[in-house]
Length: 498
Image 1 (tube, helix red, strand yellow):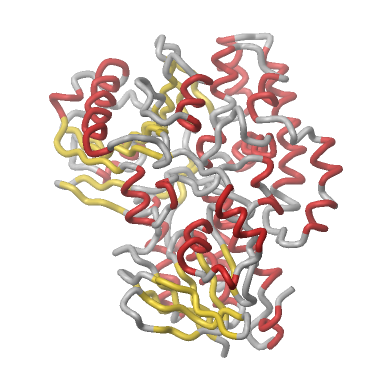
Image 2 (cartoon, helix red, strand yellow):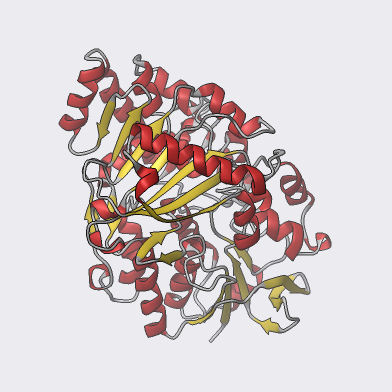
């Protein structure tokens, strides 16, 4: 039986390990975190539980597949519960827009803002479905390491006007300024600026409409635990608190890894669920890389950073939705400062997660568990997080108290936060970026970091920085790409994958 090493235990690495096991490989997974899940870590503080990673489950069939590959049912490991609304948008002037449910529910909400935009929204969803049929159904699990694979798709992408940005696409169908904001924020969930991100990511509208939005009961950490249990049943070895320092290469083929303590582990192939910029910049000798990937490593633009504040309250806030997106007064100007500026903006927009709206087990009785996420510049900016982190925490708490969570300051039981510096330290994310490289058109598909390494054979890449991109459906689909790149274990052709 051939041996496969998976470096990184995020969802891309978990999905890769399960798919390689189904192909007959003896799989070992290595991760530097104390818990499986990569960025989907779980924190416990004073009786409160906090999911640190993604909280939104879309395309649930992708998660079911990983259990079904091994004759199991996801429902026997973790429950997915549909949410309604999917998101609540709250604007600074107090207006609220609830998004989710049936098409008629969304149209009724749109009509409260602009009856004329109801027809435009229908056309937007129809256009999104066309992008979905190409960008998700046909391409999300296909490799793009060959330029010919990109060239064959250009006519379809041009017909769908994917050269437009998400903002331009939304504005072509909707006129109300608030609705334009609400229906263009989705790229931020995968690390992109709506004013720069290719409208390929407009497929998210139909993706959400097709399957809805779900929450894993017990949190994303419970889903990770379910996969951990499955891997244990399959005999996949998981080694945590273990940092890989280098990919070993012999005769132009990846042959194992070297750990931080100098130990070497041999393998027939290696799958890296690692930030590609970090992989090529620190873990693989430049002599083992192509010229093209060295250029990508130097020049590919990063996503924004994230400031994530976790807090528990002694007061219940039953009127707060499971997911709330609070949009401040500025939109395009703020996003430009976040993605291109060198200083911390004075204002912000926020993503508030209240898991206790669906699962009370996240907090003691009568209490609430929250996290609030603020997009911020990555570490390319000139921000001293030791001084500005506490100030931003204070500003966010004051804003939430004023607009959403009355008297929050008086009811805080526990709180702590993560900055881009923590993302760089804990997850080896270059620049402390929240989602690896940004989803620009010139950084998508063939232009993105390839799933088949641009260097030695038998080295494969999965995760947010690779095709098809960030977000849970993206990173899980990146592992699905391996199905067409890596033959079954019994097939010796793995030693020269083309």
